[in-house]
Image (cartoon, rainbow, N blue to C red):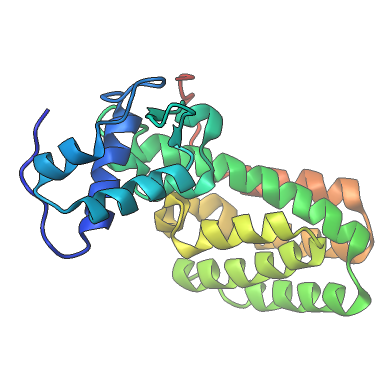
Length: 236
């Protein structure tokens, strides 16, 4: 399992990505020892400092851990890794496909959005409610151009997520719309049913304004679920 020497620029980043892909693809299975620092340096033609930096990032990503005996052992990433691993994860041979990751992210988006709508209806201030209603009105005037609707939709949902008062939801939202997760790259034409339902956006804003938490959650989930692919995904 040899590799040609990596390019000199961003050596530790490249090495991290190569080792990450070996772990995600199963070439380095859980419980196995990571290749020794000296051997990695020789295999890739880099200095040991670059190897140490790459291994440090693997530790931060919870892909490996240093045992009491000093060996670096590979962890089961499905039990230990966080959402940040989604960046570049589809590049690994044997890892999740881009299609699977996109579906997973859209499912998470629907769950978070629905509960954020519920919490926002319960917690929102009067000024936040007014902003959400106004943003829904602006949304209604943005169509039928899908690109314009997509931008208005993000701005509207940001108000709802911020109004939920849940910081974890807000950070996940930032990851979803900022490109960290593949949902950001889903073409707007695949979200047509969701984006063109202006009436549902207006009703959801009204539910939040009226403190109707259950109705807001139900409609939020129904609206966002329209963009989730209908084809069942086999559990890996």
